[in-house]
Length: 267
Image 1 (cartoon, one colour):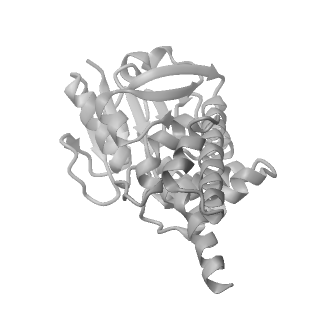
Image 2 (tube, helix red, strand yellow; image 1 turned 180 degrees about the horizontal axis):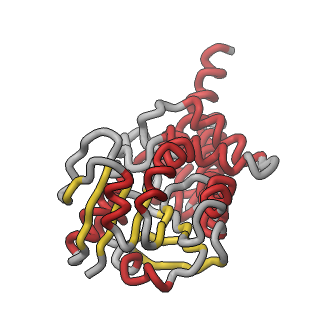
């Protein structure tokens, strides 16, 4: 059993805390607004960090991380595992303040957090925290501290790029009046086949539960664009910015079709 603190008990952090508690770890959590997560709650980030041999931060963005950093580091006496998607620059700033750091953002959403099937991109010395991370999913060691943040952006770039390409292909088919059933038969012959089948219901208008909200996906796309000029990600971000911020990020799939339909109706 390991004493673990989880700072940030939102959709992902709360499930991570419950998952670890269910695997026998002694878990204490903290959240900016009081939120029940099925674990003991600390009054401050410092109090939570003081409890943990392993301290996990899972927060919305780099601003939220910076807001708790002083308190967390004041209580830290073990290893800090930063699991938020905040980009390499934020990890560099954090690494300047503590050497007891593993950056370990994840690929996967709430279902994977609950089932312990996340993919964890871990940068730094994973050995001291391996027994905890192994209960959350598959740990992929990707290099020194900061490599985890870099790997997560690469993974998200691939995901956003594929969805943007799929959205454009579907919008083109509809613009050209390709029959809907035929359109998906066509897509099944392309490199987009697996994603087209997986996302078919969303592309045909069925709402998806907000497992990964648009506002967070857009934040991640902006982190990618901070690294350089990536045109496909720019297109994905435009679609995300046009969608409901609280919808699931797969809402970007239908934005090109909506835009094309609007152009046709106005012509």
